[in-house]
Length: 418
Image (cartoon, rainbow, N blue to C red):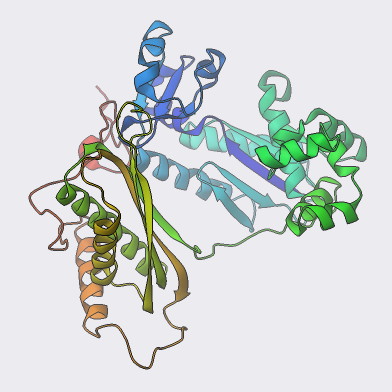
């Protein structure tokens, strides 16, 4: 058996832990630089505030409906997520952290346990120790766990946050309840294709011939179908290195000056290189993206990207940042107000196992230099040491006008009791 533990409205729940006045009230969390809505409480969903809505268009609506708008507080959410996952690790020796707010637990050897009681114990401990409400779905496969979790979440009063699929009758009933578009791993395009095939529910999908799914869709969807049929084909996954690392952000304001954009790109590249070294990888390729503000339709629009291929794999901030700045010079257009940029490092290989190039190689001084910079920044918990093409006099910050305090990660902002 597997269990899926999912935090309810995680970002909003984190805010409510330290601000109880938000309990029962509509809350919306914004993306980087207070751009779009990325998370909603149940109360805000009922008021039909769209997910992904650009807040400048919906601010009046939020005021009329008394929706509390908050900037995303990622240090707080990340720390609260770690606390929740550490608690869940006490309930199973095999845990897969699937996202910031959900984890799969493998329940091998739990045959004699009362799974309903065990799930209740998990929910109670997470709520008591962190203040975060959760739902638990338990089933013989991971895909069925997802279905069970959605059922538990759909009617909290009746389910008490728990749903267990432990019989063939329950499996069929759950799949017939689940719409095809709500099945884990089925996106918009695939949904249209399956609807045309007559599949309106997850149960319909399981009734398609397996040979047809394998031939016309993919091996991944064949595994999903088997999982929904109760035959486990999607295994637990451990922590693995990323295949690419993206650092993309919206600017605090729209920028037209090339020098401002170069500084920002250099900062993104430095962050990507740091992430590379943290997972002990190097990259063969760099992709730089630059976009204007798509919401400002009256202004000239320009979206472009440039790919740089290195002749040798590298994790050097110096090499990656210089290449990123060179790419920006190629795709930048004068007179365009740019709002968003990104740096993606791809073609990743482990640092201790890659093909060497006979004619070109990285400057041998870069490795010890990067190690020294990472060590100092880690020791002093800051990014004081920067590249020369980063503006040392300017501190780039996201626009977070509605940011709550970093209650658990900054001693100066710790909650005080009067």
